[in-house]
Image 1 (cartoon, rainbow, N blue to C red):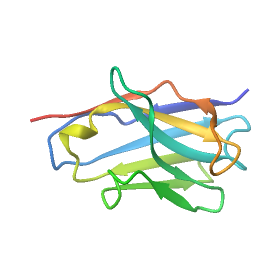
Image 2: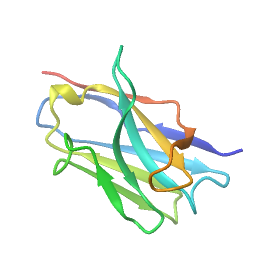
Image 3: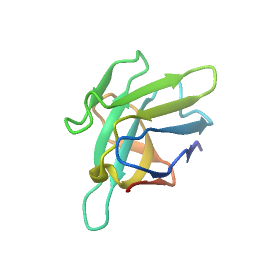
Length: 118
């Protein structure tokens, strides 16, 4: 069974940057679309960005132009570079792995807190 482990969350001021990392183990890297979702208390988990095995990407409208998703196949790791952060980006961010580009996630990480506050 595969595993996803996130890191890189924390506290940052508005306008700042953070980079999240997610290391995938087992079989859940090659052949899977990887992604990032986020969730705040009382709301549904929402898609932030996904990247296919061929490196096609799609983003939520709210993060386009500010966030960049990438994957390093040699390190079995997917990244989320977050720039120009806003207070509304505050959430728990989850790494995901799905078998298809538009499919539902089959695996989830444990989540990492991102707080944007002055």
